[in-house]
Length: 336
Image 1 (cartoon, one colour):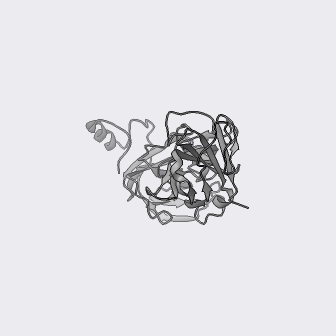
Image 2 (cartoon, helix red, strand yellow):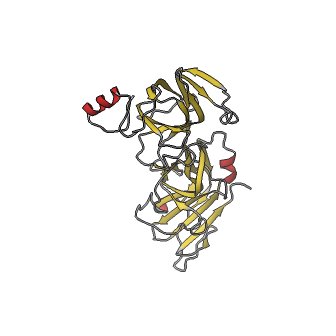
Image 3 (cartoon, helix red, strand yellow):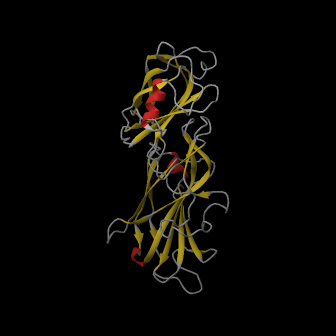
C-alpha cells in the first residue's frame, strides 16, 4: 500500500510509530484498523489500469483519506474506525480531470473543451456546422479508459470487521453485509467505445480531408452515481477509409455515455479536392438507445454519395442543400 503524501523517510517513520500522519493533526484515540481493499472486476474483466486510487470520506464531512495502489490487485490499508463513503478509480489519468475530488456526491470525471475539427485541425474553434444550436453543447475531448467503484456507506468496526450498509440502512445503522477485514469494491466501466462505419461511400476519391463528431454525449461522469452527468457534449473523432482502395469510412471514439436530453447525431465533415466543403448528418438516437452493450456500441451508417463536383454558385448535385458559412449539407434518415 502506498499513500499519496510526500514526506521525508525519517519523519514518516517517526510519525507512523506514533500512529499519526502530519496532514491529519487530530489523531483518533482508537487504534487504526488494518483492512484489505479488494477490487472486483467481474463487470469489467478487461480493466488493466496502471494503478488505483481509493478515497474514504468520513461521515463528519472532514477531509477524505486517499490510498493509492499499483495495478488492480488491492492491498491492506490503515484507517481509523468509523463510518465512511468510498470512491475508487484508476489514478493513471492523463486525458481526464477529476472535479470536486474531496466531495463524495459531486466528484466527477471530465475532459477539456476542444475545437470542433480537432481530428483535422486541433487549433480550430468555431461553431458546429449542422450541430446543436451554438452554446447548447460544449465540444469536449475524448476521455481515456476509466473504471470506477462507489460504496455509499460502510463502517470500519473496532473489531476490525467491515460492514457495508444498504441505502435504507445507512441512517439506521443496520447492516446488510459484514466481512472480516475486507472492503470489496466493485468496478464498472465509466467510459465506453463507439465505432462508426459508413459504407458504401460513392466517389470517395474526391474527398481531400474529413473528420466527424457525435453529439449528445455526457460532458462528465458522476463517480458516486456511476452514470454520465454535466451538460451535453459534442465529441470530435477521426474517421477515414480502412484501406487505400476501400469504399468504407471507419472511426472510433470514447465517451462517458449518452446525455439522453437531446437527439444524437453523427456529423461527417468533408472537404473536397476542389475546395468545397459539406457535411452529412445521420441521426443515431434510436441506434444508441437500442445498443445491447452501452460500453461497446457499433453504428453502421450509409450509403452516401460524394458529389463529383460542386458548381461555383454553391449548388451541388446528389441531394445536397446549400447551408451557411460555405457549408452544404445532406441529412441521411437512418431511423425511418
